Image (cartoon, rainbow, N blue to C red):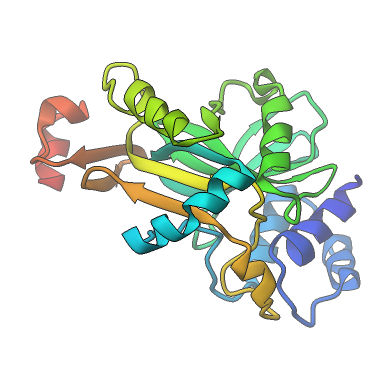
Length: 267
């Protein structure tokens, strides 16, 4: 995939936005001298209307009962609900970039591998934790979650210069598998270095789409079968470029590793 093709994919396919901007406009923009990858990404995201990336829904108990049989039939996956900051990560032309929910573009690092990838990630403790893969050689959004997870699992994370951590996503054939995951992965506080406050359950046949897609496609929206279940109350904090979270009780300085002056600023 050429650099030009990658830019076009990011704007017209990943973000799925219908606008008057054509690929020729991007070519002209590049020809005018702003050829650095970061500047191009900033420009493209600047042009976008406000919308949100795909997020899980919080189901009622009635919904859980209604979908239970389908989840087992389709095979479902469970992972910890990582308590971090949502980031879209773009790897292109040996460079890695992070895009926030309000489309601020930040450079991450340079890598040796010539990969072209787009991830949805949580950013926690200066690490990116991919949980969706949107692009790898081809557009993957219409692939089932089962297929996308297989591709994500096949990647060599050593290529990412220790900037990424692999997330444990368990394939479940029944609810005993789900119970075992919760008991073995969620309840061991010392084992979990990544903060979490619940679980995510995803139907194996679920596809990926953006919220507020233009034009609206009811079939694709209905095919988002991703559910979050919170097991504890948490508050997310980001201070001086560092990420923290507090759960269930008041924040204690010893838990945050802050100086006294910094602690006073947020408490």
